[in-house]
Picture (tube, rainbow, N blue to C red):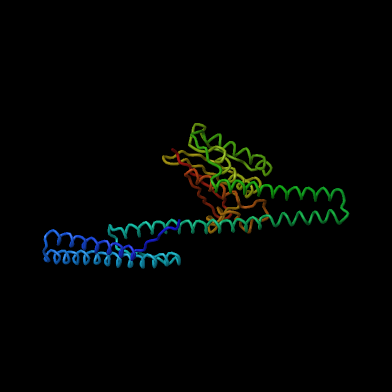
Length: 343
């Protein structure tokens, strides 16, 4: 069955016809009852008055609706062009203002979502660019070694050296992939930190276990001042990872026979962990950049690393409500201070 669509004009016409019929019937009925023509005049005047009131009301409403629809369309056009600044309606408690207010809220949410998507796209493009840059060198080295082994007669000793070099490049790729996996899991919230109040001593010990061997190879003395009774709310696994990254850098950039000092203090609001070395130091202009993903100073490219450790450290500590500071100058070593909420 075909639905009947009524326009406003058609509805007004129908109401007018019904009113005319009603007043006509009323006039005829009253004339028959009173047999007076004055009654008809009264009904006609009343009918004219009612029609004037109704059509005046309709005209006013129609004018307001037309003005509102024009302003609404103009505002929607400006929203589509992302060229809107202020509300076009007066801030008063009217139906028009309520609609406009909610329209602005919707527009704000949509704009924020659009900006968030744009930021995520930029981050993804930056990550892809960084990863491609990082994997380019080891892959090129692996291809070169493979070509040499396949196309040339190589002595047994040399072949072992090439295979060992391939193993080193594969280890670098594996380390890069693992670091990227950790980073993506932290940033996307796949990994939730399990924070609980526990001794920081055990967490620090786990981090130190990963660097002791390399420190001994370089004859670096590691001094630790950490009372076993100090407890703080933190995730042991990931906090240990964050501290290890700082300690690993300290070992890498400290000369043979150097020293690393670790000091833990409990303050009123924070637990402070200072990790100091007497290595090459970091110029002040690079203090903010060292926490960026894949950032490495040009002077240290001969040292193994991909420049993601400090980035991970900052992300892990920040997710626990803390922060990381660095104090350093060239040839005077560096001190990384990790602050974790004490409560």
